[in-house]
Image 1 (cartoon, one colour):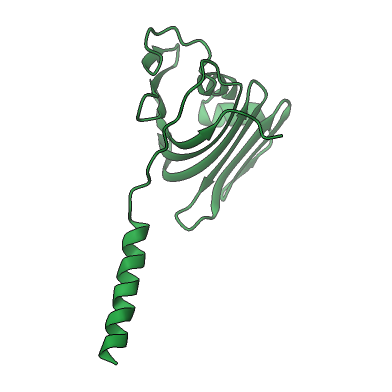
Image 2 (cartoon, helix red, strand yellow; image 1 turned 45 degrees about the vertical axis):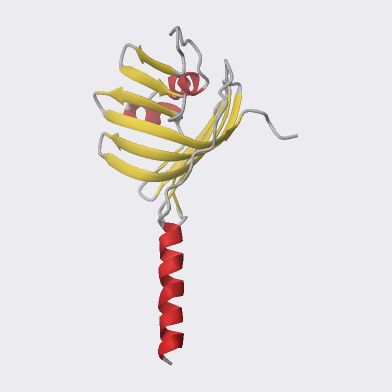
Length: 172
């Protein structure tokens, strides 16, 4: 009986320790311009009254489409944003927004600029893998060589996306 108990405890310990291993980021080769991206990411956000850290999936097709799904530690969707041309939908536990202008006023975030930043448009740095760009309302920080992060800093707070995996070619 003691052996069975000890075996059970060791199995539980092994399973818990596997869950706590750090996630390893794959080497990502960033293209000069990103016209399409599918990615699994880690999101760290402290923006206005929202604080969140967790897993996120992202699909971006320049310049019209952005789809973001943010997950809880248990895998539930806590935030869903879908923008395609004139269509817009944001779902959270607290609210549903179907108008992009309402979203912009509520979060003080322009999705067109956000998509441009994700698509690496307008980067004028010598080393674009390690670059900071000051814009009118915010700063974009690119750390694409090793860290694979893009961060936005503004008066409202900070949003950082660490890309764990990314593909830049649309699947047929």
